[in-house]
Length: 154
Image (cartoon, rainbow, N blue to C red; front, side):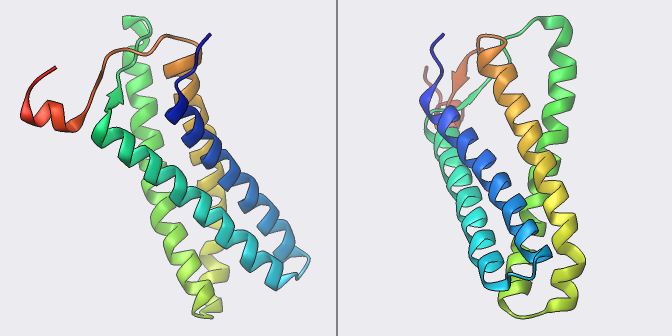
């Protein structure tokens, strides 16, 4: 089995981000504030790395269509929409969590930090599931870049 390099790398970074969120959560429970700060910033950097790879790939190479059986495509699509909703929500919460922590807005940070973490764990889990469905369990369908889709061509 040959796995596509960019989706594999980007999925690795989203998993790494979630692992560092878990480590950061444990650190704050132990009152290791400086370690927590550095770990969560690293988690954010890993998430940003994922996002950069994902957007670049989407723009220049394209998104891969689901290549599995037609009778489960609707379930995959619903699952994908759920994942995208989680990822978008998690990103917004993540930005607010990081910003509130950096600005010492502790009431807000303590309130949304745990929620952000849980959303991010589910984002990572569903992201891995999307990756597995697209590239491991089934062969990916056609890929078309946004530029080609907009400008025409093959």
